Image (cartoon, rainbow, N blue to C red; front, side, top):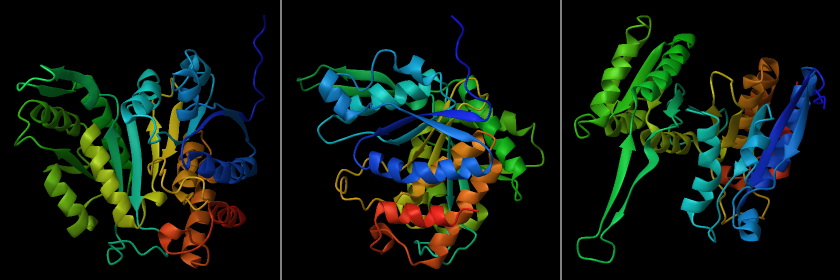
Length: 358
């Protein structure tokens, strides 16, 4: 049997809209991303995969047995959000997002953090707040190693083991240094806690320093993660690229998103830099069940994540067009969702951005 070939100039996008506000922001974002790609002469073929908490209640699984094989035939994965109060997080996350990230070796979680025009965040007086975090996503503190022991006794304990490998640290550090070298300021900060975590973080520091020797043009230094969090608030102009472990990167980027004005503005990309497998793109805000179904979620983080997807697919012009449109709408200030102090719906915000494409 001859396998059908996709038309030249077509990218297959696997869409997992997911739960909560996920379907709302994906529905609002997809048409303008398709329009931006079309302007670059590329067709986006959306392949919906209705997996998530509804699928779990219907089948007992967050996604089917052949899910990873089906996703492997896509060029990228576009994710809305996963999780709902009626499904424990250790099921919704560990049975859907984590298997995808691990199977496709999406070991870089890229999260831009910058002040967008017209948005008054907590650091409005620091126009130089422009950072990007390279978060290690395949190992570290979130591997799930450990367990509960002597349950129900006075000696009950829980052990959560972080696992760090030379390969894992080296490849994410190298990606971060390459990124820092490509940016104007050529600065890199490494998040550590080697004063308290004498095994894992001392190892992290040693490997990052070894990689740094290959990038003499990049100015870098390690920061204890608590001091780095404070520096993001007090001296953001001194930071540019941050490389961090799974846990530290998770916390620092939520702080960064809050400082820019809203979690609804923040995008994320889960990358397989070697492009051997599809990468996955998503907003970082989660499923927000408290506002799900009301049509008021901010779609900017999803649209920006989609722009990162376009860039990853080689559509730099489409990426730039989408980002300029986001900035133009926010700078104008006439259309804002409630998280930004306005009354616009999710669809109204997305339409306004779509009208600015060009």
